[in-house]
Length: 54
Image 1 (spheres, rainbow, N blue to C red):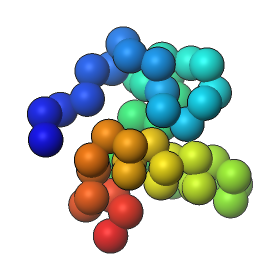
Image 2: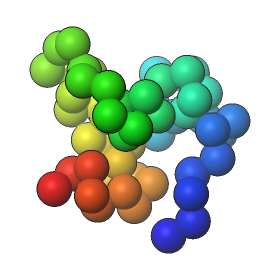
Image 3: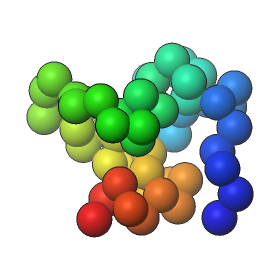
Image 4: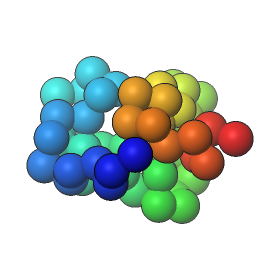
């Protein structure tokens, strides 16, 4: 799948742009709460980033 655009709305539902939300987790940062982890995993699923989910 193509690389997700950083300027699109984040699929997690936060209302933020992807670059200001879940992109940092998909690039290696660790989410600080279980809620952020689950939102980042959903975003990865929606964006087709299977490596993050695995």
